[in-house]
Length: 579
Image (tube, rainbow, N blue to C red; front, side, top):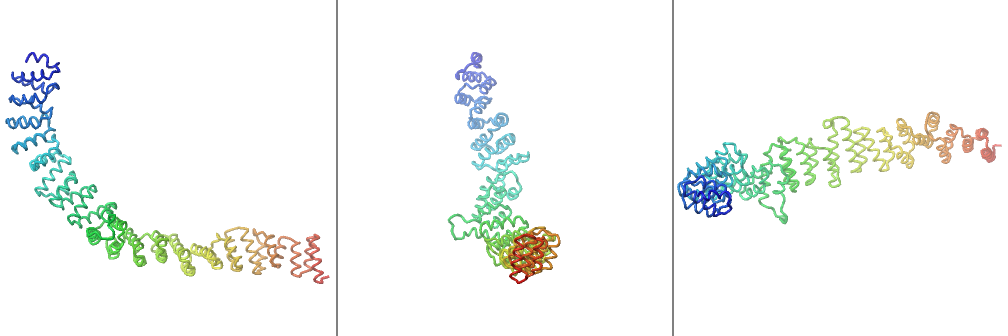
């Protein structure tokens, strides 16, 4: 012993270490044996373990260190238990390796140890024991209930480990100790663990556990509901979750199903339509459900459901989202109902719905027009500008979509608003009704389209109708074209008095050009007035000749005093025998 003691700390010979441990034990030097067993990495574990077990020392701590360091915990537990060294089992799990408590407890279970002793060990170790491993060992041996006091003690200390709460949940479920309350109120268990555990015992409890998963266990929840006919519970869960992806899982037909109706899907839809959704008091829940039905192409069920909620009186009768959805669903699935809904409902997005109605994909022009007309009334608009905007949109449907100008004119007379008349005027101009367009633009006091109006009026030769329009336009615009066209219109209508007054006043007309135009078209009286205004005596003399006013022609020629003019006048007088 002394010889080996001098070299053991430096020796790397396993035999030296083993013999030193052996001699220490024979001489009762247990502390020294314990030290080497604890600190040495040289000795052969199996050899030392076999020796220590065979020696049956009164102090098993050397053996404890060997078994702990080299994972012989099962053999250590069996040795201590069979040799009635129970206090050393407790010392091992509390002082040496609390993390290996599950292995010790498992072996004690196998050895048929006293339950009170096992409970005492667990309470002594407390929270230092790994819970998941211990629960697994107890569960495989059907001894989970024995852990209840220890688990409850851990929870009492504030433990939030899922493993602790999972195990406690399994015990309460097995004992039927108010498991529903536990599943509803406990915040720390893992639904993926307790859900499957509950399925074989009580599907309703499994549903509660999966529901607690807040979306992580949706597939399992759907499966348990379908397997055990929990359609009402599933319907309520779907409504409350407000998750379109989840809705798609239960409402969409699987690929390859064809036209055959899945009975499970039908039962679920019936529960949603007849019970779950009408019971809801949350507008967002209802809205999400409706969107899900639309996405799943179930418009028939949707319409009947929304009619029940909105038209038969409920908390959501005036809900804008639901009214929008009811009309949109009808537009998509049953257009015959749309007009009735527009008439009955007052709180929907009028502009958006109307745009959808008049779109090329639906072409519900009458319905779109009715929306604009209804929402242009004072009770539906915030101010005059909004009211006029809706009226313009209404007449827009009549002229752009329905091409009904007569009806549009009747509506414009009824509204008598300038933007409405302007919209009508542009449409009439587009459709080649210049006289009606001019009347509309005058009512609108809108000169912006004066170029197109002048062209259309000249083409249609409606100068009398054009004159009041040009007068109106001149109040706000100072344009050469307006004054020039007004002079021409006076000339064409032989309104010479107005013409003379106009050219005598301030204007920006190109009188020379319009005078030449009148002369070339034979409007000599008008041309005479214009040439007098600009002192163009050469042209004036020619006008007098055409009007057979020869004395005036001679006078004008004298003022012009050029050979060409004198020649024209001279020959004209000769032809007329005015010598």
